[in-house]
Length: 220
Image (cartoon, rainbow, N blue to C red; front, side, top):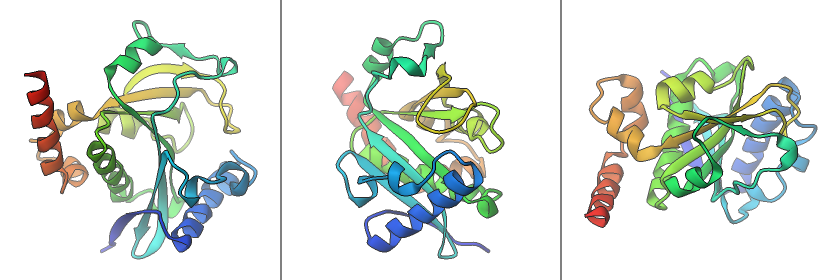
């Protein structure tokens, strides 16, 4: 049986492991970037505003996830962003405090193990809830062979809020902008008997309940 662990990247060794995962997926497999050094300058060295997580399977690096806190909603005009009907930048901003999920990747040999993605998401969720953030936002590619679009929308409940054709990665696929209300997700899955949802929220129930109680007190 495989053992899946996730840690926040802080040591030099884990940074090297993360860069190797990025190199294998984004450079060699996808050809979305030319070199990892140009794309990941100081973020993995502890630059303020980011958190990086590394998943390991039986001690072997398997996946990476990056969080960017308080992302800017002022996207470059050349990205040609189109929001869904009824969605505006102002409406998104007013919904809560955002963390952007990016660089979410899993090495090909581990993609059939759902625990890798779920435990990366669990670690990310724990951190953002503890920091009093309320929403995730992310881009995924439409039609790309290993796009997490289905996982994000059908399993986690992300909502499509917009699209754009261009971005920083070298990929011709349309980017789908997704948003997730984290407490809404918890309310939907907290009583589920699904092993997948159990994997996602294991160990987080106390955090969610405490934050939900504080939010209720604030509203009341």
